[in-house]
Length: 185
Image 1 (spheres, one colour):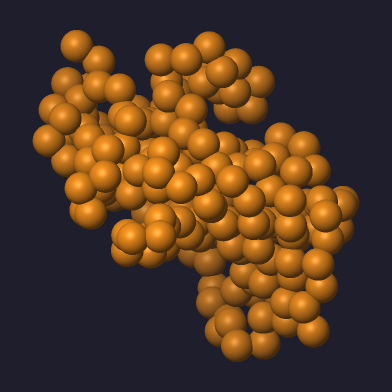
Image 2 (cartoon, rainbow, N blue to C red; image 1 turned 45 degrees about the horizontal axis):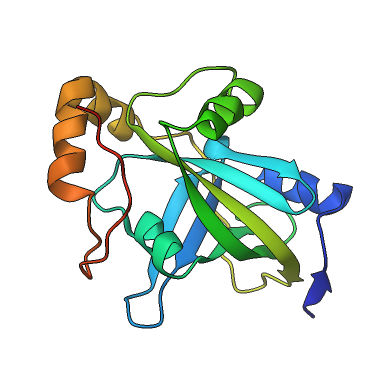
């Protein structure tokens, strides 16, 4: 039932962009596996073998730590409405810090020049395997919209509060690995 591809094609790209949520998974050989849900509006398909997403402030910064230590990253999308399907992008990731020229270029080219409050970094995935599978076990759900909670939290903290939060909570992973997050002065 599973099919493998070396790169995205138009059909696979369209499937990804029709979804409302994606998941990221990362780990090192000695760390816990991290799986995080993300809203599809943060994801961009840069070409047939590269994707990126805005990584906004959350409780931890596990993916960034895993990218520094190991680099393996998987993105998964699955259909919660319509025909069943699961699609995974397997590859190597990197964290692109907001203090780099590449970050600014990605924001300008793929996000309309706007950096949403709370954006820590952009995660970039270079994938060499795309795999689809049936998705028969994925339940049907009705999409009713995005939660306002993350925007409310970012707005309540403000830029200085977010920087303080990064310093206190996002400089190391739960396993004590450095995340490489640059916290501005």
